[in-house]
Length: 174
Image 1 (cartoon, helix red, strand yellow):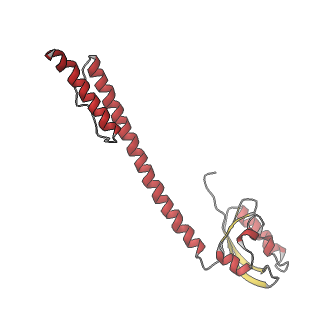
Image 2: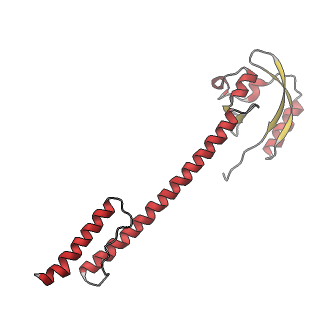
Image 3: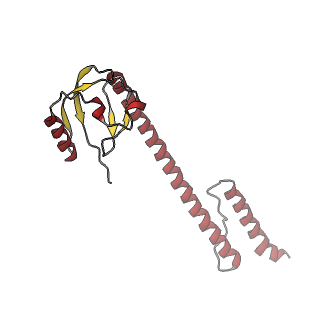
């Protein structure tokens, strides 16, 4: 009995204890048993290997969460900068449909975000800016380059206003 207890029951108790600690999120829990060729030694080796993989996986997830949190803070800061910008910001999709306008745009144009989103910047067109200006704007942006110029635009209430305009295409891997 004593010999069997020493060879089987104590190692099984250590395995159970290590499993319990690992289940309680003690990521460093290991059996501490020798990895021998008998059944208990192989079981201890498999358990320890599983615990190491779990610890590495949890550590990768923790690192990813830190990176996601930092990216979120950076995105929030950039969003606040655009929201509080003293210049109009309009973001369109590749077809020129407005996806976003900042508060300065709504203040200067008279269009609410709800009224502008889904439309194109043509809503601001006064008809008094020469067509070659728009042609140059379109060709420059389609070539992937930023454009700068002045446009005579029309507010929602019909009032005309000059706008020093910069249009920058955004690109990504796609």
